Amino acid sequence: MRYIILLIAILLATACNLSANVAPTPTQIVMVPTLRPIETERPAPTNTPRATATSGSPVCTPRGDWTIIYSVVAGDTLGSIAARTNSTTGELAAGNCLANPNNIVVGQQLRVPRVPSAPPPPTATRTPTVTPTSVTPQPYPEPVGRVGFSSYLSGDAGFYYLVRGQTVYLSWDDAPANLYRATFYLMAPGQTSTTVIAEDTNPADGVLASWTVPAGLNGHQVYAIGRVINNAAVISSYSSVVASARPSELGCFVSAAIPEGVPIYANPNPEAQIVGTLWPDSNREILGQALNGWWAFDSGIPPTGGTGGVWQIHWVPLDAPLAYSGRCEG
Image (cartoon, rainbow, N blue to C red):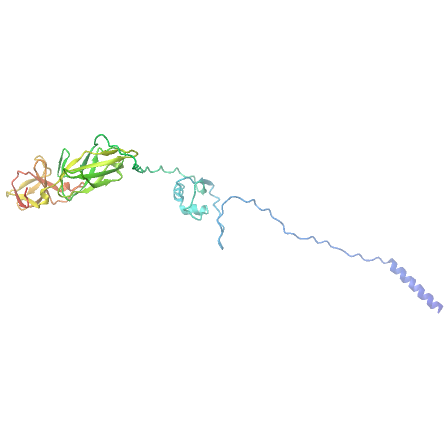
């Protein structure tokens, strides 16, 4: 028994020694770094205009290949800038991201494909300055110029025979410069009241207005009145005395009273060109009488030039052998 106890003690002692000599296995710790997103460098904001992007549409960027910058000035339109840069309105609008090509403002900078050409010189326009009503117009000391007519039967020393029903052009010969309005008036003999018969509201290129000659004129006066730009002065012309062809209102007809006929002249002058013959069966209506007594009538031949019916008027001497029909009284 004593030996058994001793053996157990020896075995226990040996076990203790073995346990004390064995080194523990260390635990390995691995350090894993925390991953963070890498921040990329952001570009500094620029003042380059960009169109507002709509849903599903790309952002518009002005054309970078257009390096020429043009500043809008007063009077510019996108169309005028396009014309001066050999471009189009659509190209400039797209190249500058313009939402409304009709809305550009002074000082706005636009990219353009080339250096703009010089703008055309402004068209000279004349805006009449209306004379204030508080200013009393001061008339010129005497009339200037005289009224003329584009077509007439005869005219001498300011007295004209006109063809009734014919449209003629009234002119103001030797009119003053710088008129902004010229009005033509008709006044009956022995009367002080007048009637406006024509007006030229833009006489910069010469005073001219159309008028249809009425019947019944006999010693009436036609004159013009105008106003000068930036001046209260009223200017008038000398009067021209007119009469519309008196017999033409009666339906008087004339023909030759001899079989061989009567020569027809281009003008009321025996030295004028003979343009035909008035035969016994001609029956031409008399339009009027020249100051030297010749009869005027419509030849029935269409005008070959000019602007007035004077080209259709032919003449026969009053002392020629003529036959009359219709109402030729007086």
